[in-house]
Length: 349
Ligand code: KG4
Ligand code: ZN
Image (cartoon, rainbow, N blue to C red; front, side, top):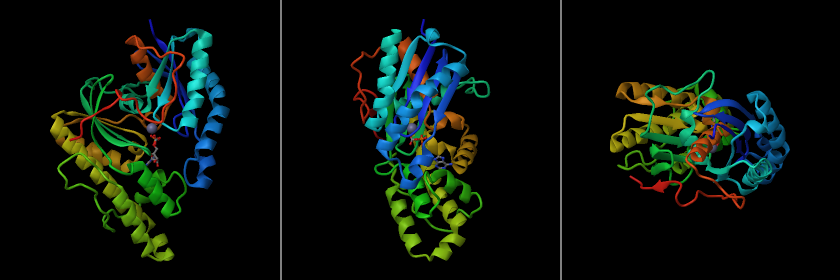
């Protein structure tokens, strides 16, 4: 019986380790955030990310087991993100996971990072559990620094991409805009903080592809429009209008996301919606989504922040379900920068 899983996540810049217990209880999740080391470069530097993963991962495994109050002997499997992501970063998690699985003779499962995000709402702990009536099928909006996609989720392993950005991810443009304003890296949370004091109608930003009757999104036009606007303003003006700029920019992103989510719900004729990924931390997205769902009579599940941003617990959940289904990866498992062909079916609407 597969009950306790050790999970590793090193696909980008956060090193994270979790112990997840059947049916989805997070016994521990510990992470090392690398924002401070990448901040001077204004973005994630892959070589630095992998070097830091190798520094952090073993101490984090020790801490995760300690916090979960279980030993390696109590584990029934090892789950690790092996795709998609930065290759140098993935290699660290994959090598450690394979070694542990080999030495401890435990079953091994490689997990798609995006599957982790999609299934994160099923996790539970002392202070969070999904609503009792939350179940498949549902529409999921996974919105992060690397991805902005809409999925129809029918079951574990049954994910159809029904919409996505055709250029930049929403988190990426939040970060770029934050950088243009000199708010540091990653800028998303800073833009959110400034926006809370600003007027969302002060500036007009484009709403990419909002009028198109499909689930495609685009954020590169917004990024260019923001760049042009800031170039037309003096440094003093920008400084004085920072809050209004952030609020107006943020409103444009949130409006596009929720508009496309509404279309997805209508097209799929579903009444359960998940929003997940790092951008789900955005306070305006959260409040606007809640108001929208209440008005439409939808069941909206947004995992708590600790399970929205990159974390190993979500990988543990996906790994647990797959191991329980009898899936196993062999010792020649490798990391991949992209999803495997069967992972996420694409049927764009
Ligand atoms: O899921 P995540 O932790 O990592 C990826 O897989 O990308 O998402 C990180 C992204 C970054 O772009 C970050 O700026 C954005 O999520 N983010 C936010 C906020 N907090 C994090 N964007 C807008 N508002 C926030 N409060
Ligand atoms: Zn992610």
